[in-house]
Amino acid sequence: MPLGCAAVVASFWLVPSVEGDAETDRQSTTLADAIGYPRQADAAGFARAALATPLGRSESFGVLEATDLPHDDPRDPMARLVWRIHHETPDTDWNVGPDTFDACYRVEFDYYGTSSGPSRITCPANAAPITPQPVPRRDIPPEFAPALEAVLGHLPPTAGLPEVRAALTTGMPAPPVDPETHLAGIPPEVLVQVRGPDVGVALFARTGVEDTDCMMGRRVAGVVRVWSLSARDQRMERPCSAEAALAAP
Image (tube, rainbow, N blue to C red; front, top):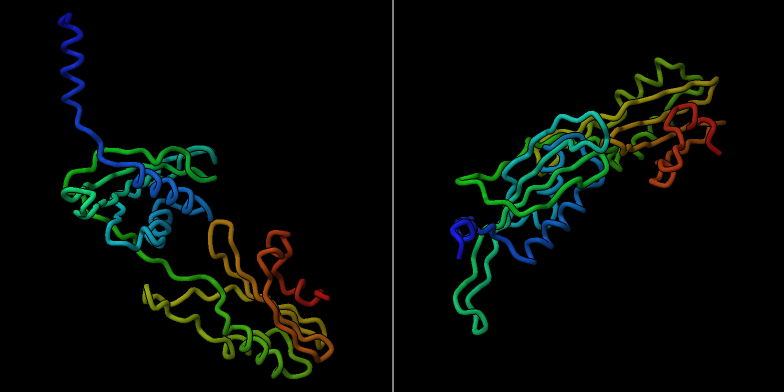
C-alpha cells in the first residue's frame, strides 16, 4: 500500500465516532419539526418549546446550548440549539448487555422553522443541561369572560369613558399565577369605545411572535354580550378593537 494511502487509513481510524442511532435521529427530527412553529422570538424560546414536549420533559433529554445568531433576512439562521438524548437499551434475552450512549444534535432555526440539522455532533465534554428563564403567560384566562360580562352589566345607563375604564380596573380579575413557573400573568391591553349609551370593549394580548388572544364585549341597546375571537377569526385578520366589538352583528 502506498504511504499516502496508509496515512489516510490511519487518520480515518483516529476520527472518533459520533454517538447516535436511527431512534435518536428520529426523535431529534420530530422534535425540531415540532418546535419550529409557532414561531419563537429567540433561542430561549426554542429551548422552552423543546423542554415543554414529552421528550423534553423526560429525564433522558437536556438542552446544552441555546444561542441567538445575528441575522438580517428571514431565511438567515436566528437561533441554534444543541441537545443531548441519553439512550439506554436494557439487558434482555435478545440484547446481551445494556446499550447505553449519549447522542448530541445541533439544529438551527430561521424565521420559518428548521434551517439546518438536526445533525449528530460529538457531545461537549462535561456539558450541563440549561434551563432558560421562564416567562409570564400572556393569554386571556377564561374567567375574564364572566368578569367582563358583569362589569358591562353593572354600568350605569349613560357611563362615560372614564367611568367605564374605572369599572374595568376594579371589576376585572388579576391574571392568575402559573402553578409551574410561579409567575403572574401579564394583563391584556384594554381598549374601550363609548358611543352614547353603548359601550364596546376589547381585551388584546400578544401571546407569541405572531399569535394573539382577543376577548370582546359590548353593551348595545342595554344587551350585554361577551365573546372571544377564534383562531379562524384571527387567521382571517378580524380586528380586535373596541370599535369592532360595537359593530359586531
